[in-house]
Image (cartoon, rainbow, N blue to C red; front, side):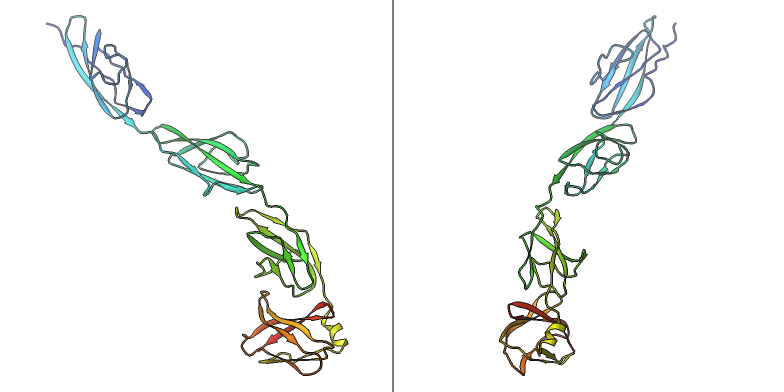
Length: 308
């Protein structure tokens, strides 16, 4: 009487879906695995198993005496990680940097190593000069690997705008958005295509297109005759501060006029008569700071106002 062979199906194994895992049986001369599903050869000691889901295998071991024994093992199949990467809308303006984040795994490897802050890590900064695609490989805790790609689209800046000085205001060529600057500093609330300057200086505009990309104009000097010169010529605007009524004396001719607020919006518009005692009724205007703009002798003159 012979002892049974020491059948051994090997230790339980883990594998990634779609990969091959070699089994290793021992203890006999011949081997037969059950079920044969997913095995490269069910009649050898070390077949390759390729599975999409977890399975249990039993091996029947036969020794030289024809005695048989069996053992089993469990092959656990882990699905590949679902790796994704995005920078939001994945579109940037030329010269900008995108913050790209990958999710779905524990370790990440990026390629190629171009226009990118690092080739490892879940989050990277990228700054392509034209449309560009990276591949990121993600590895999970089981060592399973999957990849994805992320493409960053690069939009060119709009053509630099042109600023026109027409005497009463500065105007920009058409765009989707505007920000006016005075001597290089942004003007609060100056976000329209046209801007009525309140002071002399160099005015420029930054425009934004529908992609959110921007460009800056060259500065244009805007200057007018100062209020001191107007006063010397006999023009008087009073009282200051005012309440509801503003009086103007000394105009030599009728003057097209308007009163604008700090954002360049017109709150009153009309004609101021030449001579003495012309009146502008601003009773319906809120308290605050304003500018009176007068067209005098073909040029625009500005007088700062305060309403209490």
